[in-house]
Length: 75
Image (cartoon, rainbow, N blue to C red; front, side):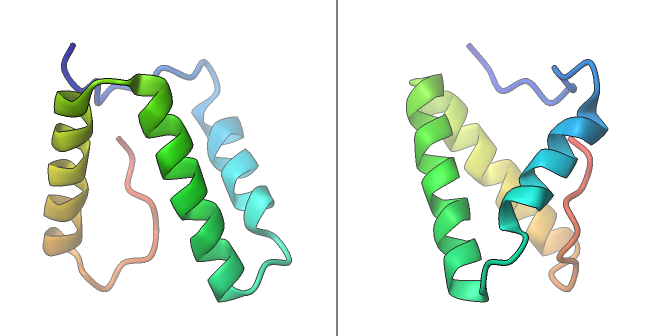
């Protein structure tokens, strides 16, 4: 399996909104902890080390492209 970078959600805005809402009311540390937990849970669900490796590389490239942006870029 290779990393899919096209949206798999019929309503991607709803998925984004759900993630944003999950962070509502959390302080920065709790928000970072939630992000870390979600990453590990979803990485385990994927279960493919090569896909995880590709996702990490893509995430790092996007940070390098715009290190000041805190906005999620469309996949």
